[in-house]
Length: 308
Image (cartoon, one colour):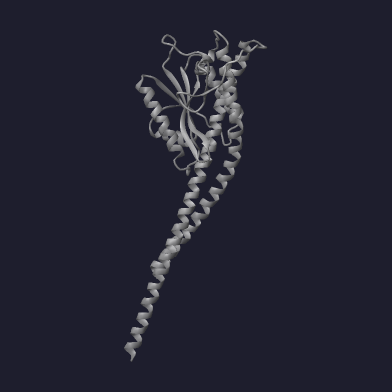
C-alpha cells in the first residue's frame, strides 16, 4: 500500500505542475499576440526608412555626416560597443542560451582581431551569465521593460550615437533574437553603427537590412534623381538618427516577441510531458493496486484453507 500511496502523491504533484505550466503557456500566448502586432506593424516602417536613407546617401555626392563615418587607421580606437538583449525570466527554452552563445562567439572573434568589447546588457539572465563568466559589464540597462517603451529605447540610441560621434567606439553592435515568424527565430548580431554600409550598399543598387553583423542586402531598384527641399544635409541630419532609433527599437520588439514565442513553446512542451507523466503514473498505480489486491486475496484464501 505504501508504494501506491507514493505514486498517488507524485501524480498529484505532477498535476499541480501541469496546471502551472498550462497557465504560463496561456499567459505567454496572450503576450505573444500583443507583441506580434507591434513587431510586425513596425518592421515595414523600419525597413522603408532604412531604404530611403540608403537611397538618399547614395544619390548625394560627397555626403558627409558623423553617423556615416567609417573609422580608419588614424582615428580608430579599437573599441566596439556590444548591446546584448536577453530576458529577465527563464523557462523560455533555448532563447537566452542561443543569444548568449552568439554574443560570446562575436566577442571572441573581435578579441582575436585585437579589438576591445564594452558590454551593455539588457535582462537579468544576460547579467548573471556575464558575471559568471567574469566579464565586466559597462552598463546594465534595467530601465527597459516588457513591452519595451520607445522613449527608453530612444535614450539608449541617442547615447550610442553620441559616443560613436565622439569617437569613443568604432562601431555599435546588437546581439538579439531576430524574429522572422512564429516558427523561426534566429540569434543575430546587427550592426547599428556606423551607417556607412547603407550608402555603400545603395551605391551597388542594394539596401542593407537589419539582421546580420555583415549586413543582409536586398535590391532597391533603379536609382532615381531627387530634388531636395530642404537640402540633403538637413534631411540626413533628421533621417540618419531616426534610422538608428527605429532599427534599435525594432531589435527590442523582435527580441521580446521571440522570448514570448520561446516561452509559449517551452510551456506547451512541459504541459504535454506532464500529461504523459500523469498517464504513466496512473498506469503504475493501477498495476500496484492490482498487485496489492491479488496479494490480499491470496492471504485470505490461504487463511481459509488453513482453517479447514
